[in-house]
Length: 270
Length: 288
Image (cartoon, rainbow over all chains, first blue to last red; front, top):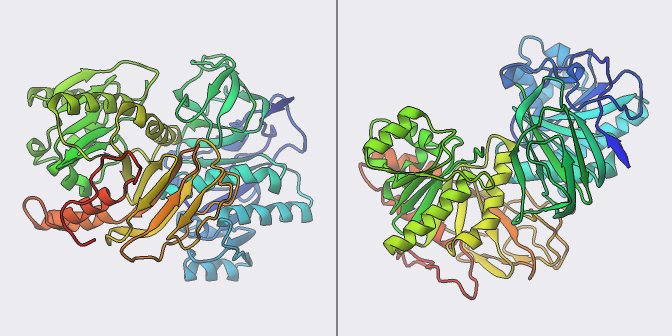
Protein backbone atom coordinates (compact mmCIF):
# COMPACT_ATOMS: atom_id res chain seq x y z
CA UNK A 1 0.00 0.00 0.00
CA UNK A 2 1.58 3.21 -1.05
CA UNK A 3 0.54 6.05 1.13
CA UNK A 4 1.79 9.48 0.32
CA UNK A 5 1.87 12.31 2.71
CA UNK A 6 0.37 15.19 1.00
CA UNK A 7 -0.56 18.75 1.03
CA UNK A 8 -2.63 20.08 -1.74
CA UNK A 9 -0.63 22.18 -4.07
CA UNK A 10 -1.65 25.67 -4.79
CA UNK A 11 -3.07 26.51 -1.42
CA UNK A 12 -2.19 29.86 -0.10
CA UNK A 13 0.29 30.43 2.67
CA UNK A 14 -0.64 29.50 6.16
CA UNK A 15 1.01 31.00 9.14
CA UNK A 16 0.96 29.13 12.36
CA UNK A 17 1.27 29.36 16.09
CA UNK A 18 3.25 27.37 18.44
CA UNK A 19 3.05 27.19 22.14
CA UNK A 20 3.33 24.97 25.10
CA UNK A 21 1.71 21.71 25.87
CA UNK A 22 -1.93 21.26 26.72
CA UNK A 23 -2.62 24.17 24.53
CA UNK A 24 -3.53 23.21 21.02
CA UNK A 25 -4.53 25.07 18.00
CA UNK A 26 -5.73 23.17 15.03
CA UNK A 27 -5.51 24.71 11.67
CA UNK A 28 -7.39 23.09 8.92
CA UNK A 29 -6.02 24.10 5.62
CA UNK A 30 -7.62 23.73 2.32
CA UNK A 31 -5.78 22.15 -0.50
CA UNK A 32 -6.38 22.77 -4.13
CA UNK A 33 -9.65 21.01 -4.13
CA UNK A 34 -8.44 17.49 -4.43
CA UNK A 35 -9.80 15.48 -1.61
CA UNK A 36 -7.59 12.56 -2.43
CA UNK A 37 -4.01 11.58 -2.16
CA UNK A 38 -1.65 13.54 -4.25
CA UNK A 39 1.48 11.78 -5.39
CA UNK A 40 3.52 14.86 -5.78
CA UNK A 41 2.82 16.43 -2.47
CA UNK A 42 4.89 16.96 0.58
CA UNK A 43 4.40 17.43 4.27
CA UNK A 44 6.11 20.72 3.91
CA UNK A 45 4.52 22.05 0.82
CA UNK A 46 5.53 25.64 0.58
CA UNK A 47 1.92 26.60 0.27
CA UNK A 48 1.37 25.31 3.75
CA UNK A 49 4.46 26.34 5.55
CA UNK A 50 6.30 28.97 3.65
CA UNK A 51 5.17 31.64 5.97
CA UNK A 52 6.65 30.18 9.10
CA UNK A 53 8.01 33.14 10.87
CA UNK A 54 11.47 33.31 12.30
CA UNK A 55 10.27 33.66 15.77
CA UNK A 56 7.70 31.17 16.89
CA UNK A 57 5.70 33.74 18.76
CA UNK A 58 5.04 35.58 15.56
CA UNK A 59 3.52 32.76 13.70
CA UNK A 60 0.00 33.29 12.57
CA UNK A 61 -2.79 31.41 10.93
CA UNK A 62 -4.16 33.61 8.25
CA UNK A 63 -7.88 34.03 7.95
CA UNK A 64 -8.02 33.21 4.33
CA UNK A 65 -5.81 30.19 4.33
CA UNK A 66 -6.92 28.07 7.20
CA UNK A 67 -10.34 26.80 6.37
CA UNK A 68 -11.13 26.34 9.96
CA UNK A 69 -9.36 27.33 13.12
CA UNK A 70 -10.01 25.88 16.51
CA UNK A 71 -8.53 26.15 19.94
CA UNK A 72 -8.34 23.62 22.70
CA UNK A 73 -8.79 25.39 26.03
CA UNK A 74 -5.59 27.27 26.86
CA UNK A 75 -4.63 27.34 23.22
CA UNK A 76 -6.97 30.28 23.05
CA UNK A 77 -4.77 32.19 25.50
CA UNK A 78 -1.85 31.90 23.16
CA UNK A 79 -3.86 32.73 20.10
CA UNK A 80 -5.11 35.79 21.90
CA UNK A 81 -1.64 36.86 22.99
CA UNK A 82 0.24 36.38 19.77
CA UNK A 83 -2.44 37.94 17.57
CA UNK A 84 -2.58 41.14 19.57
CA UNK A 85 -3.41 43.98 17.25
CA UNK A 86 -5.03 41.77 14.65
CA UNK A 87 -7.09 39.36 16.64
CA UNK A 88 -10.09 39.67 14.39
CA UNK A 89 -8.17 38.14 11.53
CA UNK A 90 -7.52 35.04 13.52
CA UNK A 91 -10.76 34.20 15.19
CA UNK A 92 -11.26 30.52 15.86
CA UNK A 93 -14.43 28.84 14.72
CA UNK A 94 -14.70 27.33 18.14
CA UNK A 95 -12.90 26.85 21.41
CA UNK A 96 -13.42 23.55 23.11
CA UNK A 97 -12.18 22.02 26.32
CA UNK A 98 -12.87 21.76 30.00
CA UNK A 99 -11.84 25.39 30.35
CA UNK A 100 -9.50 25.01 33.25
CA UNK A 101 -6.76 26.81 31.33
CA UNK A 102 -8.40 29.54 29.30
CA UNK A 103 -8.30 32.96 30.88
CA UNK A 104 -11.70 34.49 31.59
CA UNK A 105 -11.03 37.62 29.55
CA UNK A 106 -9.88 35.53 26.62
CA UNK A 107 -12.96 33.37 26.72
CA UNK A 108 -15.12 36.43 26.95
CA UNK A 109 -13.40 38.12 24.06
CA UNK A 110 -13.88 35.23 21.69
CA UNK A 111 -17.42 34.59 22.85
CA UNK A 112 -18.32 38.19 22.08
CA UNK A 113 -16.71 37.86 18.69
CA UNK A 114 -19.00 34.99 17.88
CA UNK A 115 -16.69 32.05 18.39
CA UNK A 116 -18.49 28.97 19.53
CA UNK A 117 -17.58 27.88 23.03
CA UNK A 118 -17.94 24.13 23.33
CA UNK A 119 -17.55 22.40 26.64
CA UNK A 120 -15.91 18.99 26.50
CA UNK A 121 -15.64 17.94 30.15
CA UNK A 122 -14.68 14.29 29.59
CA UNK A 123 -11.69 13.69 31.86
CA UNK A 124 -10.64 10.53 30.14
CA UNK A 125 -9.37 12.38 27.10
CA UNK A 126 -7.22 15.41 26.63
CA UNK A 127 -8.52 18.73 25.40
CA UNK A 128 -6.59 18.15 22.20
CA UNK A 129 -8.25 14.84 21.47
CA UNK A 130 -11.67 16.22 22.18
CA UNK A 131 -10.97 19.27 20.04
CA UNK A 132 -10.05 17.00 17.18
CA UNK A 133 -13.38 15.22 17.52
CA UNK A 134 -15.29 18.47 17.42
CA UNK A 135 -13.19 19.62 14.49
CA UNK A 136 -13.99 16.51 12.51
CA UNK A 137 -17.69 16.98 13.17
CA UNK A 138 -17.52 20.53 11.94
CA UNK A 139 -15.68 19.47 8.82
CA UNK A 140 -18.38 16.95 8.07
CA UNK A 141 -21.25 19.28 8.91
CA UNK A 142 -19.86 22.00 6.70
CA UNK A 143 -18.74 19.52 4.07
CA UNK A 144 -15.33 21.13 3.91
CA UNK A 145 -12.68 19.92 1.50
CA UNK A 146 -9.80 19.48 3.83
CA UNK A 147 -6.42 17.92 3.18
CA UNK A 148 -4.76 18.01 6.51
CA UNK A 149 -5.08 19.00 10.10
CA UNK A 150 -2.14 20.96 11.40
CA UNK A 151 -1.78 21.24 15.13
CA UNK A 152 0.38 23.91 16.58
CA UNK A 153 1.98 23.26 19.92
CA UNK A 154 2.01 20.29 22.24
CA UNK A 155 5.60 19.20 22.00
CA UNK A 156 7.05 21.24 24.83
CA UNK A 157 6.51 21.87 28.49
CA UNK A 158 5.14 19.25 30.81
CA UNK A 159 6.44 15.86 29.82
CA UNK A 160 3.14 14.09 30.38
CA UNK A 161 1.45 16.53 28.06
CA UNK A 162 4.05 16.00 25.34
CA UNK A 163 3.31 12.30 25.52
CA UNK A 164 -0.40 13.00 25.55
CA UNK A 165 0.02 14.84 22.26
CA UNK A 166 1.78 11.83 20.81
CA UNK A 167 -0.94 9.61 22.15
CA UNK A 168 -3.58 11.67 20.37
CA UNK A 169 -1.87 10.92 17.07
CA UNK A 170 -2.52 7.26 17.78
CA UNK A 171 -6.16 7.99 18.44
CA UNK A 172 -6.54 10.31 15.46
CA UNK A 173 -7.31 7.64 12.86
CA UNK A 174 -10.38 6.68 14.86
CA UNK A 175 -11.46 10.30 14.90
CA UNK A 176 -10.65 11.48 11.40
CA UNK A 177 -9.32 10.07 8.16
CA UNK A 178 -7.34 13.23 7.60
CA UNK A 179 -3.61 13.32 8.30
CA UNK A 180 -2.86 15.07 11.57
CA UNK A 181 0.52 16.60 12.12
CA UNK A 182 1.85 18.45 15.13
CA UNK A 183 4.31 21.29 14.88
CA UNK A 184 6.08 23.22 17.59
CA UNK A 185 9.04 25.47 17.08
CA UNK A 186 11.33 23.53 14.76
CA UNK A 187 9.83 20.12 15.43
CA UNK A 188 7.18 18.33 13.43
CA UNK A 189 5.76 14.92 14.18
CA UNK A 190 3.53 12.67 12.14
CA UNK A 191 2.47 9.11 12.83
CA UNK A 192 3.11 6.70 9.97
CA UNK A 193 0.61 3.87 9.93
CA UNK A 194 1.77 0.39 8.92
CA UNK A 195 2.62 0.31 5.25
CA UNK A 196 4.75 2.21 2.78
CA UNK A 197 5.14 5.95 2.89
CA UNK A 198 6.76 8.46 0.64
CA UNK A 199 7.80 11.79 2.10
CA UNK A 200 8.85 14.62 -0.16
CA UNK A 201 11.58 16.49 1.64
CA UNK A 202 12.73 18.86 -1.04
CA UNK A 203 10.66 21.92 -0.37
CA UNK A 204 13.48 23.86 1.19
CA UNK A 205 11.50 24.11 4.41
CA UNK A 206 13.13 21.07 5.91
CA UNK A 207 15.60 21.53 8.71
CA UNK A 208 18.64 19.39 9.11
CA UNK A 209 17.44 16.55 11.30
CA UNK A 210 14.81 13.89 11.22
CA UNK A 211 14.05 10.65 12.99
CA UNK A 212 11.86 7.61 13.35
CA UNK A 213 10.57 6.88 16.82
CA UNK A 214 8.88 3.55 17.64
CA UNK A 215 7.02 5.21 20.44
CA UNK A 216 4.14 2.83 20.98
CA UNK A 217 5.69 -0.52 20.28
CA UNK A 218 8.69 -1.95 18.51
CA UNK A 219 8.55 -1.99 14.73
CA UNK A 220 10.04 -5.25 13.64
CA UNK A 221 10.62 -4.54 9.99
CA UNK A 222 11.52 -1.04 8.99
CA UNK A 223 13.06 -0.16 5.66
CA UNK A 224 13.92 3.33 4.55
CA UNK A 225 15.48 5.16 1.65
CA UNK A 226 16.49 8.77 1.37
CA UNK A 227 18.03 9.07 4.80
CA UNK A 228 21.66 9.43 5.62
CA UNK A 229 21.38 6.40 7.89
CA UNK A 230 18.89 4.10 6.26
CA UNK A 231 17.33 0.98 7.66
CA UNK A 232 16.86 -2.32 5.89
CA UNK A 233 14.33 -4.67 7.43
CA UNK A 234 15.58 -3.58 10.79
CA UNK A 235 13.88 -3.44 14.10
CA UNK A 236 13.25 -0.14 15.81
CA UNK A 237 12.39 -0.18 19.47
CA UNK A 238 13.19 1.61 22.68
CA UNK A 239 16.09 -0.26 24.20
CA UNK A 240 17.13 -1.58 20.79
CA UNK A 241 17.36 1.14 18.19
CA UNK A 242 15.68 4.52 17.85
CA UNK A 243 16.51 6.73 14.92
CA UNK A 244 17.27 10.26 16.09
CA UNK A 245 19.53 12.95 14.68
CA UNK A 246 19.21 11.36 11.28
CA UNK A 247 19.28 13.46 8.15
CA UNK A 248 18.71 13.28 4.39
CA UNK A 249 20.84 11.86 1.63
CA UNK A 250 20.02 14.66 -0.75
CA UNK A 251 17.68 12.75 -3.02
CA UNK A 252 14.73 14.81 -1.89
CA UNK A 253 12.51 11.84 -1.15
CA UNK A 254 12.33 9.62 1.89
CA UNK A 255 10.46 6.34 1.86
CA UNK A 256 9.57 4.45 4.99
CA UNK A 257 8.03 1.03 5.20
CA UNK A 258 6.93 -0.16 8.61
CA UNK A 259 4.90 -2.98 10.10
CA UNK A 260 3.64 -1.02 13.08
CA UNK A 261 2.80 2.63 13.67
CA UNK A 262 6.00 4.61 13.62
CA UNK A 263 6.42 8.24 14.53
CA UNK A 264 8.18 10.36 11.94
CA UNK A 265 9.79 13.51 13.26
CA UNK A 266 11.64 16.20 11.41
CA UNK A 267 13.01 19.67 11.71
CA UNK A 268 11.28 22.48 9.94
CA UNK A 269 12.88 25.80 9.41
CA UNK A 270 11.59 28.47 11.64
CA UNK B 1 26.21 13.82 15.18
CA UNK B 2 24.06 13.33 18.17
CA UNK B 3 23.15 16.43 19.96
CA UNK B 4 21.46 15.01 23.00
CA UNK B 5 24.11 16.12 25.37
CA UNK B 6 24.22 15.68 29.07
CA UNK B 7 26.00 16.86 32.04
CA UNK B 8 26.49 14.39 34.83
CA UNK B 9 26.85 15.38 38.38
CA UNK B 10 27.27 13.64 41.67
CA UNK B 11 25.55 15.06 44.63
CA UNK B 12 26.66 13.43 47.77
CA UNK B 13 25.57 10.04 46.77
CA UNK B 14 23.83 11.31 43.76
CA UNK B 15 25.27 11.77 40.35
CA UNK B 16 23.66 14.17 38.03
CA UNK B 17 23.65 14.66 34.36
CA UNK B 18 22.78 17.93 32.86
CA UNK B 19 21.64 18.18 29.32
CA UNK B 20 22.23 20.62 26.55
CA UNK B 21 18.76 21.94 26.72
CA UNK B 22 18.14 24.87 28.94
CA UNK B 23 19.56 24.26 32.34
CA UNK B 24 17.93 26.37 34.93
CA UNK B 25 20.14 28.35 37.16
CA UNK B 26 17.95 26.87 39.85
CA UNK B 27 19.70 23.60 39.30
CA UNK B 28 22.98 24.97 40.52
CA UNK B 29 22.56 23.49 43.92
CA UNK B 30 22.71 20.06 42.39
CA UNK B 31 25.92 20.83 40.74
CA UNK B 32 27.45 22.27 43.83
CA UNK B 33 26.97 19.23 45.93
CA UNK B 34 27.60 16.58 43.39
CA UNK B 35 30.16 13.92 44.12
CA UNK B 36 31.01 13.85 40.50
CA UNK B 37 30.00 16.17 37.73
CA UNK B 38 30.25 15.45 34.07
CA UNK B 39 29.10 17.09 30.90
CA UNK B 40 28.15 15.62 27.61
CA UNK B 41 29.32 17.89 24.81
CA UNK B 42 27.08 20.96 24.65
CA UNK B 43 26.01 20.41 28.22
CA UNK B 44 29.28 22.11 29.04
CA UNK B 45 28.09 25.26 27.29
CA UNK B 46 25.14 25.45 29.60
CA UNK B 47 27.17 24.69 32.68
CA UNK B 48 29.58 27.41 31.66
CA UNK B 49 26.78 29.90 31.10
CA UNK B 50 24.71 29.28 34.18
CA UNK B 51 27.69 29.18 36.54
CA UNK B 52 29.09 32.48 35.40
CA UNK B 53 30.86 34.17 38.27
CA UNK B 54 31.38 30.94 40.18
CA UNK B 55 32.52 28.52 37.54
CA UNK B 56 35.30 27.12 39.63
CA UNK B 57 32.81 25.76 42.11
CA UNK B 58 31.15 23.73 39.41
CA UNK B 59 33.94 22.20 37.42
CA UNK B 60 33.04 18.90 35.82
CA UNK B 61 35.29 15.90 36.33
CA UNK B 62 35.11 15.31 32.63
CA UNK B 63 33.43 16.41 29.45
CA UNK B 64 32.73 13.72 26.93
CA UNK B 65 31.17 13.67 23.49
CA UNK B 66 31.91 14.13 19.84
CA UNK B 67 32.37 17.83 20.50
CA UNK B 68 30.22 19.12 17.71
CA UNK B 69 28.24 21.25 20.16
CA UNK B 70 30.68 22.52 22.75
CA UNK B 71 31.94 26.02 22.12
CA UNK B 72 35.71 26.30 21.64
CA UNK B 73 36.17 28.80 24.45
CA UNK B 74 34.17 26.61 26.81
CA UNK B 75 36.22 23.56 25.97
CA UNK B 76 39.38 25.53 26.43
CA UNK B 77 38.27 26.94 29.76
CA UNK B 78 37.49 23.58 31.26
CA UNK B 79 40.60 21.98 29.80
CA UNK B 80 42.75 24.65 31.41
CA UNK B 81 40.96 24.10 34.70
CA UNK B 82 41.96 20.47 34.61
CA UNK B 83 38.73 18.84 33.48
CA UNK B 84 39.28 15.70 31.49
CA UNK B 85 38.21 15.97 27.89
CA UNK B 86 37.12 12.56 26.63
CA UNK B 87 36.28 12.02 23.01
CA UNK B 88 33.43 9.59 22.35
CA UNK B 89 32.97 9.69 18.60
CA UNK B 90 30.64 6.71 18.24
CA UNK B 91 27.81 7.91 16.05
CA UNK B 92 25.48 5.07 16.94
CA UNK B 93 24.84 6.42 20.41
CA UNK B 94 23.97 9.79 21.79
CA UNK B 95 26.38 11.90 23.75
CA UNK B 96 24.20 11.33 26.78
CA UNK B 97 24.42 7.57 26.52
CA UNK B 98 28.17 7.66 26.02
CA UNK B 99 28.60 10.06 28.90
CA UNK B 100 26.71 7.65 31.11
CA UNK B 101 29.15 4.90 30.13
CA UNK B 102 32.15 7.02 30.97
CA UNK B 103 30.50 8.06 34.21
CA UNK B 104 29.93 4.47 35.24
CA UNK B 105 33.57 3.69 34.55
CA UNK B 106 34.67 6.60 36.68
CA UNK B 107 32.42 5.52 39.51
CA UNK B 108 33.93 2.06 39.42
CA UNK B 109 37.51 3.29 39.08
CA UNK B 110 37.11 5.67 41.98
CA UNK B 111 34.96 3.23 43.93
CA UNK B 112 32.42 5.92 44.66
CA UNK B 113 29.37 5.18 46.78
CA UNK B 114 26.65 6.40 44.54
CA UNK B 115 22.92 6.06 44.92
CA UNK B 116 21.54 7.69 41.87
CA UNK B 117 22.31 9.42 38.65
CA UNK B 118 20.34 12.59 38.13
CA UNK B 119 20.28 14.04 34.69
CA UNK B 120 19.35 17.65 34.20
CA UNK B 121 17.76 18.56 30.92
CA UNK B 122 16.86 16.52 27.86
CA UNK B 123 13.10 16.83 27.95
CA UNK B 124 12.67 19.94 25.88
CA UNK B 125 13.62 21.31 22.52
CA UNK B 126 14.06 19.09 19.51
CA UNK B 127 11.52 16.32 19.58
CA UNK B 128 13.97 13.67 18.39
CA UNK B 129 16.32 14.58 21.20
CA UNK B 130 13.57 14.32 23.80
CA UNK B 131 12.91 10.84 22.52
CA UNK B 132 16.63 10.10 22.54
CA UNK B 133 16.72 11.00 26.23
CA UNK B 134 13.88 8.59 26.92
CA UNK B 135 15.65 5.97 24.84
CA UNK B 136 18.77 6.32 26.98
CA UNK B 137 16.72 5.40 30.04
CA UNK B 138 16.00 2.10 28.32
CA UNK B 139 19.67 1.55 27.68
CA UNK B 140 20.77 2.67 31.12
CA UNK B 141 20.35 -0.72 32.85
CA UNK B 142 22.95 -2.17 30.49
CA UNK B 143 25.32 0.62 31.38
CA UNK B 144 24.81 1.04 35.10
CA UNK B 145 22.88 -0.59 37.91
CA UNK B 146 22.20 2.82 39.39
CA UNK B 147 18.83 4.46 38.94
CA UNK B 148 18.92 7.17 36.33
CA UNK B 149 16.34 9.93 36.42
CA UNK B 150 15.94 12.91 34.15
CA UNK B 151 14.68 16.26 35.32
CA UNK B 152 13.88 19.36 33.35
CA UNK B 153 11.92 22.31 34.60
CA UNK B 154 9.02 20.81 36.50
CA UNK B 155 9.17 17.41 34.85
CA UNK B 156 10.90 14.31 36.10
CA UNK B 157 10.96 10.97 34.36
CA UNK B 158 12.05 7.58 35.53
CA UNK B 159 11.75 4.21 33.84
CA UNK B 160 10.06 1.51 35.91
CA UNK B 161 11.37 -1.91 35.04
CA UNK B 162 9.01 -4.86 35.13
CA UNK B 163 8.04 -5.67 38.70
CA UNK B 164 6.64 -3.87 41.72
CA UNK B 165 7.59 -0.36 42.57
CA UNK B 166 6.92 1.85 45.52
CA UNK B 167 7.22 5.56 45.09
CA UNK B 168 7.12 7.85 48.09
CA UNK B 169 5.41 11.01 47.02
CA UNK B 170 5.04 12.69 50.37
CA UNK B 171 8.16 14.78 50.58
CA UNK B 172 6.37 17.99 49.81
CA UNK B 173 8.48 18.43 46.70
CA UNK B 174 5.96 16.83 44.44
CA UNK B 175 4.00 18.94 42.04
CA UNK B 176 0.40 18.27 41.25
CA UNK B 177 0.59 15.89 38.34
CA UNK B 178 2.05 12.52 37.52
CA UNK B 179 1.53 9.80 35.00
CA UNK B 180 2.50 6.50 33.50
CA UNK B 181 3.56 6.30 29.89
CA UNK B 182 4.05 3.00 28.10
CA UNK B 183 6.77 4.28 25.84
CA UNK B 184 8.33 1.62 23.73
CA UNK B 185 5.62 -0.97 23.93
CA UNK B 186 2.28 -1.70 25.54
CA UNK B 187 2.23 -2.85 29.13
CA UNK B 188 -0.29 -5.58 29.40
CA UNK B 189 -0.83 -5.69 33.11
CA UNK B 190 -0.50 -2.56 35.14
CA UNK B 191 -1.89 -2.08 38.60
CA UNK B 192 -1.52 0.99 40.73
CA UNK B 193 -2.51 2.32 44.10
CA UNK B 194 -2.13 5.78 45.51
CA UNK B 195 -3.16 7.63 42.39
CA UNK B 196 -6.34 9.54 41.96
CA UNK B 197 -7.09 7.39 38.96
CA UNK B 198 -5.65 3.98 39.66
CA UNK B 199 -5.22 1.24 37.15
CA UNK B 200 -6.56 -2.21 37.62
CA UNK B 201 -5.09 -4.95 35.50
CA UNK B 202 -5.70 -3.25 32.23
CA UNK B 203 -3.71 -3.01 29.12
CA UNK B 204 -1.82 0.20 29.20
CA UNK B 205 -0.91 1.01 25.67
CA UNK B 206 -0.17 4.32 24.19
CA UNK B 207 -3.36 3.97 22.25
CA UNK B 208 -5.38 3.42 25.35
CA UNK B 209 -6.45 5.95 27.87
CA UNK B 210 -3.74 8.30 28.82
CA UNK B 211 -3.70 8.93 32.48
CA UNK B 212 -1.60 12.00 32.16
CA UNK B 213 -2.68 15.19 33.67
CA UNK B 214 -4.33 13.49 36.56
CA UNK B 215 -3.58 14.67 39.99
CA UNK B 216 -2.44 12.70 42.91
CA UNK B 217 -4.10 13.78 46.06
CA UNK B 218 -2.54 11.34 48.39
CA UNK B 219 -0.01 13.02 50.56
CA UNK B 220 0.27 10.48 53.27
CA UNK B 221 3.38 8.81 54.36
CA UNK B 222 3.35 6.31 51.71
CA UNK B 223 2.25 5.82 48.43
CA UNK B 224 2.07 4.96 44.99
CA UNK B 225 2.65 1.37 44.42
CA UNK B 226 2.80 0.37 40.83
CA UNK B 227 2.83 -3.17 39.77
CA UNK B 228 4.43 -3.10 36.41
CA UNK B 229 3.97 -5.89 34.01
CA UNK B 230 6.46 -8.64 34.11
CA UNK B 231 7.56 -8.01 30.65
CA UNK B 232 7.54 -4.38 29.79
CA UNK B 233 9.12 -1.30 31.26
CA UNK B 234 6.95 1.68 31.93
CA UNK B 235 8.00 5.28 32.01
CA UNK B 236 6.86 7.13 35.03
CA UNK B 237 7.09 10.75 35.61
CA UNK B 238 6.02 13.33 37.98
CA UNK B 239 5.98 16.99 38.48
CA UNK B 240 8.82 18.24 40.52
CA UNK B 241 8.68 21.48 42.35
CA UNK B 242 12.02 20.91 43.90
CA UNK B 243 14.00 22.92 41.46
CA UNK B 244 12.01 26.01 42.13
CA UNK B 245 12.06 25.38 45.81
CA UNK B 246 15.78 25.03 45.73
CA UNK B 247 16.23 28.16 43.76
CA UNK B 248 14.92 30.15 46.66
CA UNK B 249 17.10 28.34 49.14
CA UNK B 250 20.19 28.51 47.04
CA UNK B 251 20.22 32.19 46.55
CA UNK B 252 19.63 32.98 50.16
CA UNK B 253 22.34 30.92 51.67
CA UNK B 254 25.95 30.71 50.86
CA UNK B 255 26.62 27.05 50.60
CA UNK B 256 24.52 24.00 50.66
CA UNK B 257 21.04 24.87 51.77
CA UNK B 258 19.53 22.64 54.39
CA UNK B 259 16.43 22.38 52.30
CA UNK B 260 18.41 20.67 49.61
CA UNK B 261 18.45 17.61 51.79
CA UNK B 262 14.73 17.51 51.48
CA UNK B 263 15.13 17.25 47.81
CA UNK B 264 17.59 14.45 48.19
CA UNK B 265 14.97 12.71 50.24
CA UNK B 266 12.64 13.09 47.35
CA UNK B 267 15.13 11.76 44.88
CA UNK B 268 16.12 8.86 46.98
CA UNK B 269 12.56 8.02 47.75
CA UNK B 270 11.47 8.01 44.18
CA UNK B 271 13.11 4.71 43.63
CA UNK B 272 12.26 1.26 42.73
CA UNK B 273 11.81 -1.25 45.45
CA UNK B 274 12.96 -4.14 43.43
CA UNK B 275 14.05 -7.35 44.97
CA UNK B 276 17.60 -6.90 43.92
CA UNK B 277 17.78 -3.20 44.60
CA UNK B 278 20.78 -2.05 46.52
CA UNK B 279 19.72 1.52 46.58
CA UNK B 280 19.44 3.41 49.79
CA UNK B 281 16.12 5.02 50.37
CA UNK B 282 16.80 7.53 53.10
CA UNK B 283 19.26 10.31 53.58
CA UNK B 284 18.89 10.16 57.31
CA UNK B 285 16.03 12.47 57.89
CA UNK B 286 14.28 9.63 59.57
CA UNK B 287 10.73 10.71 59.38
CA UNK B 288 9.31 7.74 57.58
